[in-house]
Image 1: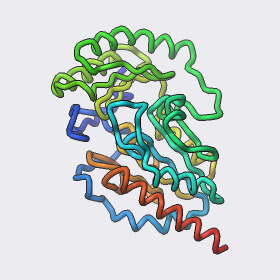
Image 2 (image 1 turned 60 degrees about the vertical axis):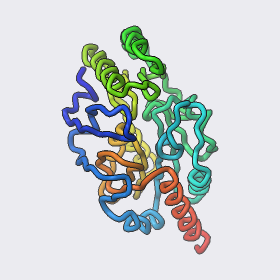
Image 3 (image 1 turned 180 degrees about the vertical axis):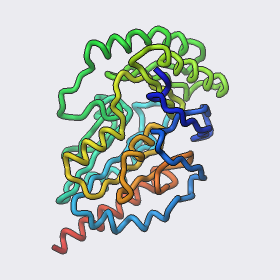
Amino acid sequence: MPIADGLPSRVDDRIGGRCSVLRPVADADVSVQKGDCCSVTVAIDSAFDRAVNAAELLVVSDFDGTLAPLTGDAMRVHPDPVGVAALQQLSELPHTTVAVLSGRDLQSLAKVAPLREPVVLAGSHGAETAGAQETANEQQQRLLHSAADALEAIAEQASGAFVEYKPYHLALHVRLVADQEHASRMLEEAASIAANIDGLSATFGKCIVEIAATTCTKGTWIQSQQQATGATVTIFAGDDVTDEHGFAALQPTDISIKVGSGATGARYRLADTAAISQWFARLAAARAARYSAN
């Protein structure tokens, strides 16, 4: 199976200055743009009133790199308290649905994301949703098992590399590998495993390649939630290559926000976790004021 569901589009996306590699970025119809971390495709304030006044608002945020700065230890992360409080406040407003949609497996996400219902938690790029009963089927488990040994062999090439096991994915992490060029070669080698096993696909992220036994993406999950909630405006904020699937799923009236630097198909850009957290806080205050005035 070709890399990233056979998508031919590849961009030299030097996100974060480490682990650079030629990466597939999104669906073939995504318009990818480059820019520094402070540039914007369109001034984001132009979308603010549309979000505040949406008849039915769906707010979806990635976790790592968006709500919480990236760290070397996945279980020792520090979500921005401003962003967390804002999403919680938004979730309790009328006609407003809030979700955190992560590449982490759901169990890991629930441990590090300090958010409570009615915020929806979704892991494994949307393959797992809190309260649902999804499990990998026998065929998916076999596919992942068939790639595991080869992926572990690649991880053994360098200190700091390791394989993460998720219900629907295997992930090779190389953030802690000192030699960046070797790390990039390891990621490419890992992706080639999926290319040789029908039913698997590979997607690159920040210092990671994920091998998937599912066709679920952040884009397909967002679309299902749009249908379920009847959202008239959807906001999706994310920082990584896998978030491009989510950006591609949005309509022109929706609000896609790239957090940080790197090529993107998102319409808007904010510099970092602090910036998106402050924007969520402004949105929560303004939307709350709208309902309190009615």
